[in-house]
Image (cartoon, rainbow, N blue to C red; front, side, top):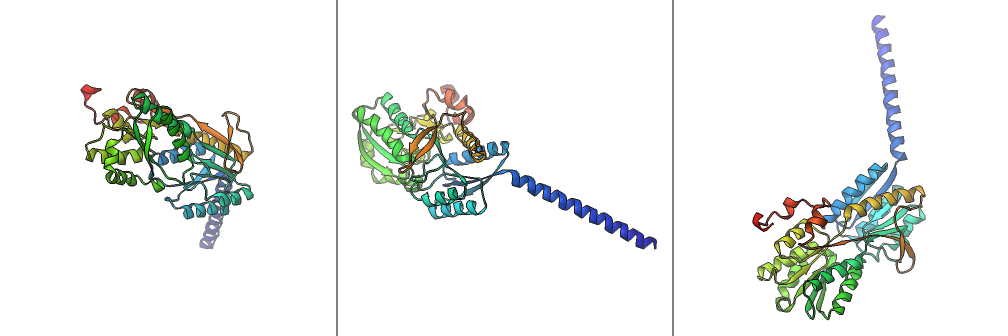
Amino acid sequence: MIAGGLAVILLALCAMGCAKESSDSEKSISADSDKIQIGMSFDSFLIERWQRDRDVFVSMAKELGAEVNVQNANGDVAEQKKQVDYFIKKGMDAIVIVAIDSDSLRDSVKRAKDEGIVVIAYDRQIQNADVDLYISFDNEKVGTMMAQTMVDNGLVDGKVIMICGSPTDSNVPLVERGFRNVMARNRNTIVDTFYADGWQAEMASEYIYKNTGLVRESDAIMCGNDDIASSVVRALSERRLAGKIMVAGQDADLEACQRIVEGTQLMTVYKPIEKLAQTAAICAVKLVKGEEITEYEVSTISDGTNVVPYLKVEPASVTKNNMDEVIINSGFHLKEDIYLNVPEENL
């Protein structure tokens, strides 16, 4: 009798425990479902800065009570389309896209918007897609800064090679336009223009190897980003030309900052990634909630067919002279890392 009674009590306690577990589980699921869900599709993480963009965006979104599902398309347009479809199927509240090909995602974006999902084009515009927001840097100004720094360093009536990024990246022609305008005003001749498909930096070094004669005759090389500049400077070093030809890049990668203080790269363009990523996360949450973006200056830009909201963040030109002020004081890179290969007596 006593044993039977104990069994009944144990069964009752077990049932109560199971019921509590089930209740706690349901509360957890309910709490998660209340959070804003954001899908984020990246081109790839081959470029150093994208990992920083990702981390800052996810951190800020989390602070705002949102969850982010990050996907990496590895430079494959078809894969990026599948990722957008996946986000739609999962019922995301917002989708943020770093587009591989600015011309190929119109239908994907339309499907998302038809489902009431907010779509943000991050850093790169998506053509003819009528996104809810395009957020990036002033890319024409990036090209202007590259060129003007070369001019300020004495480049007038000179010869320049342009090794640009991917031709499917909407930012590339904007950077190119800004660069060419300054070159033309200062009577500099663009002797050749090359595009690195998919931002493959190794294509830049191959270009240098195959065109060494033209390179030797040139005064400067404009590089689409610092990853490409790394490949270019490496190839120039093998030809004993590093430091003799001006090299410009963008993104303020650590290696680029090191090359600048060492003298093998003239400049880079610092783009405050933290500000861009944080702002994008804030705007994504606001748009999902149906709130107006009032704390930032939002202009408009044509995507080819539609006029879309455009929020642009200002870049900054970085040379050896203002490295400490712009990069170190902002905390973007540490001083000891930047000056790692510079003798202490030269600091």
